[in-house]
Amino acid sequence: MAEGFKIDQRHGKSRVRVARVWRPHSGGHVMVEWEVDVSLFSDCLPSYTSDDNSSIVATDSMKNTVYGKAKECTEELTLERFALLLARHFTTYYPQVTGAIVSIVEKPWERVLIDGKPHSHGFKLGSELHTTEVTMKKCGAVNIISGLKNLSLLKTTQSGFEGFVRDKYTLLPDTRERIVATEVTSSWRYKFANISQIPPAPFCFRQRYNEVKKVLSDTFFGPVDTGVYSPSVQNTLYLMATAVLNRFQEIEWVHLRMPNLHFLPVNMSSKENPNMVKFADDVYLPTSEPHGTIQATISRAMSKL
Image (cartoon, rainbow, N blue to C red; front, side, top):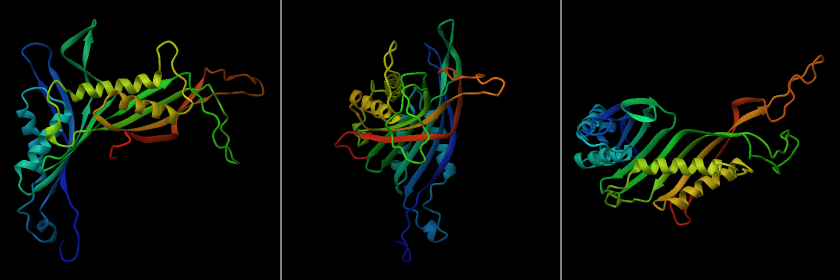
């Protein structure tokens, strides 16, 4: 409280880009590229209400800490572990800092395969982004949310949409045959409530990320030979999220955002050529604007969102 006003404040550094290469004596090089955001909760009210900056941790120092800690990590680690390391540093090193939020987005550099063999030091850029947000208090209480972006999925059949509300504005026909395509954004929270509860190796956040991504994709597509019918994006979203929760007990909730990216049937005709293009589940107009947006958070019955 200051002069009758309440101040809720934090400050930090955004879009700190860092790349780290590990060069083990045996095996190929390991390379990551991260974009790091740091935000600190701290007792620095005088900097807002007067000209006293003595308790401010400079955002430039936060940026430099990211590079310093990356250098200190002599062994490969995941972005979740690095976010935990940074958050723990800020909340223990500075007495006035009561909490920290560290968010990281990993650029998807993937090892190149040459004639089926992994290259020792060659990488190519993939598509999906691995994300995390770690919130930590000085007491060690922690909240870990991991996620992914840009997971593009498409099925050319086994999808429909019918039985929806019809009124004077409805033009969309019922169908049991359509292309369904989406670009999945997902996040999930781990149940670890304190830094002391985070399991040591061999538990690996990167492995769990890859496994969650596989479960989401496999559930969307269904069996290789037959697929699985999707009566709506909503139903597919629910099945994808519950598959993750049923598989991984350390995950408390899953949030999915799945835009419905439309592939519109193409019919073209003219007076001279009435059947120029007659749609037969073959020619489509891909369009992403406008698109439907479906999102939901699926949690265990006793979990806190």
